[in-house]
Length: 499
Image (cartoon, rainbow, N blue to C red; front, side, top):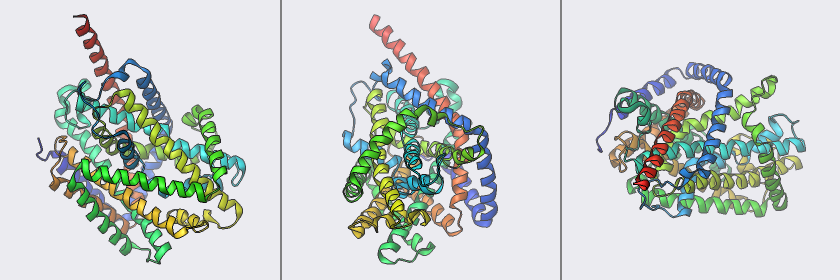
């Protein structure tokens, strides 16, 4: 079962073609992918809004339905990881670098640079900035990850299928999933994963570079970023070699400790009372505006529509493109939990952590901007968090913590991605060979370095967002397939009980 599948060779061929085009003609690559991405955002924005809201509705239904009692595994199976370690793994794989990169920058942007509907710099923009950020990192995202992960975990651990996206569609398409069409689906998932993680590695390297420049005067440029990616590659390959129960488990727990420590610093050093008030008020605003935020397409306002395309619809496509990777990883670490326990944990724990995080970092950044002490809005995104720390006590300590946390998230994402990619290219093996994981590790880092050197990260981002559209239809089929199988199981159980 551990032999290498065609998915491995086909995906590597596609990666070589895409990266090769990006190197030979980066400007045309970016322009071409940009046009397609803009078309997808404009033409399918309404569909993305409906899809993400539907997945949230399905998540709620599963929590409260009789299906909630079904275990992801045999009835006698119990979770492999403690609840705290499990939450740490969800948090690390699902958000990671994005929280540090955008923790201060996104709320600040919605307040001072590009508000959704309010006037920039006003109290209304302040409140709106938090609601929008909560939307982009909250329940919708985790419902998406949760549903895809649930389908994978259910079919893998309950039904004994291989851990492949294609295997979850067998109840609908039968043995076609073992042939050509199954391979196409798995190639799409692996392609999106490898490019999504490479983009994340690129952004992570840029931000670590910015932090080292801020603290120690390191030169900002491709040479420094190449060194950073090389060091991180060695570290995450060492971690990948040690396996899931050691490497990723220790890294995820370290991430949670570092993240909570940095969050604690912010709550103490920032405007503590205002942070807690903004957090509470923003939760209320998020809940009371939930339906409107979930389904807004601004059909009659071109300015608002452009904002939605740039932010919310971009995010929905971005998270969908990340779903194969994050959800496979979540599925792998969730064996033994009930559907109810799984969905409640996946929906609530990372969402609440993200809400507290953005309240602390966003409020502090906005208050510094309002006070005039530093014009954070004019600073490059990768530097906002470090510039914000410079206005607070213990700036060197908090900046060093932030760099450590980015590096740790960076290593965890790459490590868990090599595991998922290895699994996907060895017929869903739960223990992919180290040689395959190492090859994928070098490929991800190689993509990041090559595209950073030619300025092709945004073209790569466009490519992933385009790939999200076909994958979104696969997600809908996965949901249908899951319910088909759950209904059959409940009927069979009733029949067995009556016997």
